[in-house]
Image (cartoon, rainbow, N blue to C red; front, side):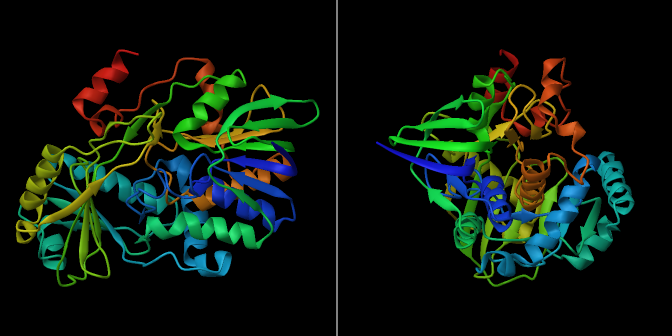
Amino acid sequence: MSTREADICVIGAGLVGCFSALFLAQRGFHVILLDKGMAGREASGTSFGTLRMQGRHPAKFPLAVLSHAAWEQFTGLTGEQCGYQRSGHSYLALDSSENARIDQYAREAAEAGLNVEVLSGKAARRRWPLLSERVTRASWSPRDGISDPRLTGPAVARGAARQGATILENTAVTAIVPTNPGFRVETRAGVTLICDKIVNAAGAWSGQFARSLGEPVPMFPAGPPIVETEARPLLGITSFLCIDGSIILRQHSDGRFWIASLSRQQADLVAGNATVPQERVASIMRRLAEICPSLAELKPVRAWSGVEGYLPDMMPVIGPSSTTPGVVHAFGMSCRGYQIAPGVGHVVAELVTKGRSAIAIDEFAISRFAGRVKTHKSLFPSLDPVTMQAIRQR
């Protein structure tokens, strides 16, 4: 048993928590960043690693643009590499009925100051010959990119440590106790933390802490299936995301492909995993062959998934607690948090130190769950039928 003191405790060492700790430590605060496992190993570490700005909800564009600058300056911020490449990103419509969404994404991106090019299906195939005749329209954002999620979270955590933050891994939080002033944080590792303020950035596990503070949220865990294949010669392609969510594709610098699908399956919060059945791998590879016929013979090597926290409106919770002064929430990214994590961390640091954010975050307030929350139209299509039925029965 031991006791440690800090100005701020950041619960959860995913990307949001790590960037929050980094920016707070840069401001001179004594920060303790703790996680039930290892830094950057949950949803952040099992992410697809796409850094796209286009296709965001308009309320998230300021976060995406702010984050983009951080990704481009990643080495200067952390002292390490994250595999960042400005590879660009393309949305693909696979049916003419989806063309309007491509146009919508381009309009919204232009309103946010981004340069997104719209391509006909024929023009997309000229640019990327691996695409099939199924592609009817595409968007192209040259500023978007990719990084390696296996490197990124740990690198940001070490960057925070270089700024003076203390990292406590394998230290699961069991209770947050307001002591007025400040807080006592109890952990399963027997370490008690005394702090002035708390950041709740525990990803899919954040809901239990919000509930303990009298702020229940309808969050549920699900996991994205990702398949890694054998290496092939580099094609010089961008990263692709089909509008219908059936395929997300990128190629690593060593030739390996990652293929994912937005049809996610249930995840287990207790076990901390979401398995990928072999039939899911097979269906993903079949779908890839329809969209990219030249990749039909690719051999899958392994598959994995993570545990992400979803909210019914597919919007995150970012902002101060509505019940407990001194607590800032940053969770519920709903599979869309990887790219915006630096921006969220910046906002968290502003909220903790100044009590306000330069970026508008009203739409992300936790208080919205005190009333009726509309389920976003993209929620159920992003889940497999079993998970969808389980959520509807809640």
